[in-house]
Image 1 (spheres, one colour):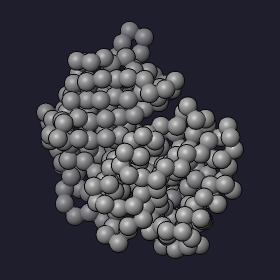
Image 2 (cartoon, rainbow, N blue to C red; image 1 turned 90 degrees about the horizontal axis):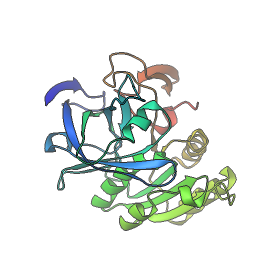
Image 3 (cartoon, rainbow, N blue to C red; image 1 turned 45 degrees about the vertical axis):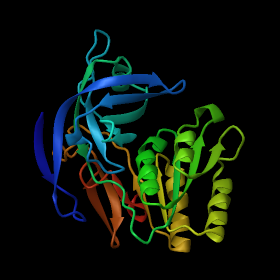
Image 4 (cartoon, rainbow, N blue to C red; image 1 turned 60 degrees about the vertical axis):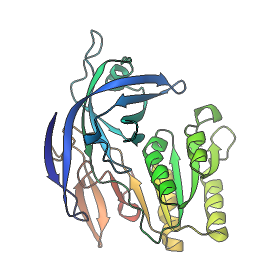
Length: 280
């Protein structure tokens, strides 16, 4: 095991330990036709994570698949009491196809935990999560943290169809109010989503909003956040090479104090202020 420390983002003060370790695959099972859940036995040293952080995975090499770079993967779950680290991923390209070949007992080299995660401030009691597709994976640890802190949680889960909805039971077991919306029945339409959120604001109120994975959802939450003065955060996805801020591959633009600034998603993020994010 190797370890190195990197400075945290400006809102954090201490040094973040980053570990490179070999984990053992416990299982790597299909969730539906597109997604798989990878569960690793992991040493305690890498399980001091925060919701929204990620790991850089060294994908296996096979005769058919030779991914060159590591793949950044948001944390789906971390359980120090069980010594487990979970990932939920969609099989789309060479790297994730190689990950899909892993079987129980094999080793996987991981680097992390990396990045700046989500915040839940003390006065944020009523939390809203809105995510689509694999974005739900990034928000799952946030739901667990909200449950541990005794916060009220509403999770709006969006997908193309009902059979593609994921993590509903997981959120429900954490005491969250679940609102599933899908394309095939029209409930994921932005006008309907806005109606759902505004009804929630009028009813119990929302202290903070969180999202990941959809440009349309980002823009809607930015609009509602401005109108109702509700803060929020977004976890952004970006192509990465090194994952530790050196290669500058993941730089993107943000709005801050009336100016456009460029920041690295891997180091200053992947979680950013909702209103500072620029749509794609």
